[in-house]
Image (cartoon, rainbow over all chains, first blue to last red):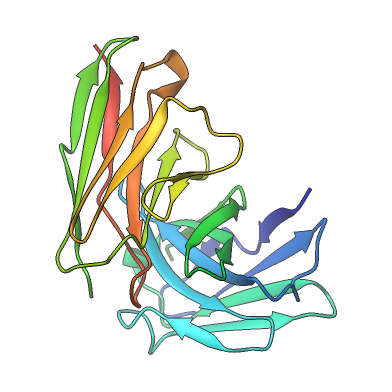
Length: 123
Length: 107
């Protein structure tokens, strides 16, 4: 059964770069029907899509974060990663990685999620 | 960006109730909508995609309907494990966007 696991520092200083990795186990990140994405949730608030990547390296970013976000994929390690630069307290959130299924009929969904990792931005 | 607005933001209900949550898109999104359930401290769980297709393993008391701009999630007979927050999400266009959530609490 496919599983996703986020990893990375739980505390990042303001103005620095947040870096997280999502390790995919139980399946290949190179499957053609899937994108891989990052979603975040500030404490007590709703969900915000950060961006997605295809195994080929094609990326799609939320314009609200695009200038600060980089998502990359390492197929040899079955991992994809998030870098968010120049962080502030507003970037404090639980960060989830998720598999985004894309069907031939155009249907989509984030069907498998990691457990999430809390990242706090503070000096 | 397409704005997704859910109503109500929260409400109380009893086990056995039939409950309906509404999600409205700021522009037409055809049937490109998914619903998720989130319990405290847990990742969201996919319930429905393509507005009305039940994800494998999700109980049949959950159903979705709608197209265009107006969508509903219905729980036909609320169970204790259904008390949670529910989110809609559109995938008609980038950026992918979620509703603000609807919290279903125990009356």
